[in-house]
Image (cartoon, rainbow, N blue to C red):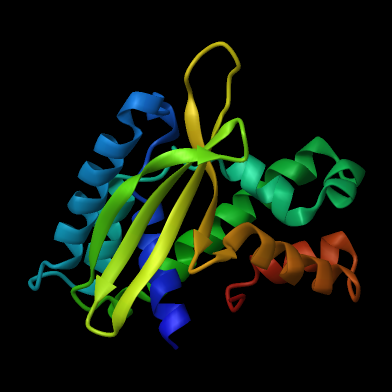
Length: 199
């Protein structure tokens, strides 16, 4: 249950960044701090319903996360390369919607947690990791955002994965999709993920 709560808070925070505003390395820590603070203020508004909070958060939404790369890694190179570009785009959108749906449905799990920014450090040679900590009544939990530079020769740092208490969200989804693909075709899995009842 606690993992689910932390994952929900992570998704809420994740949905506040903008790909059109890909960050320079020198801006990552400051801009992430501002945006996390903004979304937590929305969540603390007592006069808003959960759907209204979701709408406010969606207004600030979510383009510093590279959903295409996240979808590609989650699906796996072999499966990704085996499908058409149209199917790749469709899967990316379904993957993005799956994340958004998850946090909107679970906004009620938010319980006045705070996020502490620890700092930015090198990660895997050419990548960066922003260390943060979710601080709550039930304890403190590490949430690390992993960035890569989308365009060589220019600074366009985007998030491609998040480590949640030591567990990669992308690898978690990769295991889920790999399990489904053992039993279903890609099209069958895609239809399942597009279902309104899909979790």
